[in-house]
Image 1 (cartoon, rainbow, N blue to C red):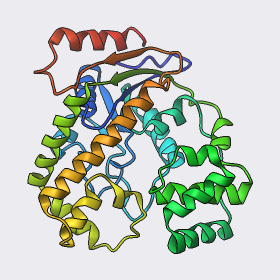
Image 2 (image 1 turned 180 degrees about the vertical axis):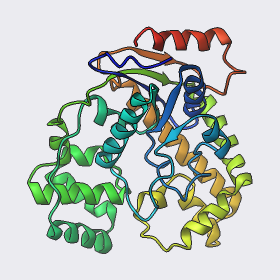
Image 3 (image 1 turned 60 degrees about the vertical axis):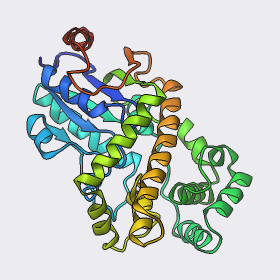
Length: 324
C-alpha cells in the first residue's frame, strides 16, 4: 500500500496502549502488511543505553521493518516532548515521501497529544529559576518541592508525583520564569500537526498485563538487563535523568549496590511497572488520541499472529486502508 500523496492531510497511524500490551508486535505486523515505518513514541525507548530494559525492538526486528527514533539519544541527555515532536514530524514526512505509512507506536500519551492537539511554546526558563529548582531539590528533596509547587501551581502539582524530581523541577522553573503554570501553558497549545490520525488502542485486562510484566522482566534478566544497568551506572550520570529512572533501573541499581536481593529487585520492578500501566490505561481511556478521527480499541494483549486470527488482522488492515 502507498500513502495517498494527493491528500491535503496525509494519514498517520497511532498504535497506543500500556507497557507490555503488545504494541510493538502489532505495529510490526501492520508495518509488514501496509508497507509502514514504525516510529517510536515511547519516552524511554529513545535512550541508546537501554535496549533491554525498555524492550526496544531487536536487531532482527529492525532488519525486517524500518524503525525510527529508537535508541537515538544518549542517557546523559534528557529528552522532551518538543524534541520528540520535531523528530517525529521529520520521520513522518520521510516515510510519506517514500510512499510509506507512518506508524507511531508507544505508550507516552503526551507525545501523541503534541501531534494531534498541538504543543504550547513555553519560553525557556531563566538560569536563576533553573538554579533555584536544583537548589531546592538538593536541599529539601522532591517531596518538599512538590508541596511548595502546590501553593503556587496547584493544577500542575496535582498531576505530578512527589517523587518525580525532574518534572517537579521543570514545573518550578516554568512557574518562576513565566508566572504561569505548565498546565496553563499546555492549555494554550499551538496547532496540531498537518496530518490525519487514526488510532488503534490496546486495552488488555489487568491480569494479562501483570502476567506479561513478570514474564518479560524475567526474560530481560536473561537477556542482560543487569549488565545493562551496571554499564549505565558506570557512566556516573545525574540520578534525576529520565534514563536513570526507567522501570527496572532503580531496582537493579539497588541490587548491584548490595541493598536488596535480585528477587526483591524483580518484585519491586514488577510492582512499579504494574502501577505505571494502570496510570497509562486510565490516561488513554480519557484522551482522544485521534481527535474525532477513527479509533479502534482491542480489549486484549497482542502477542503476535499466533494469538490473533488472520481475519482479525485483515480487519485491522482494512480499517486502516479505508481511511487512505
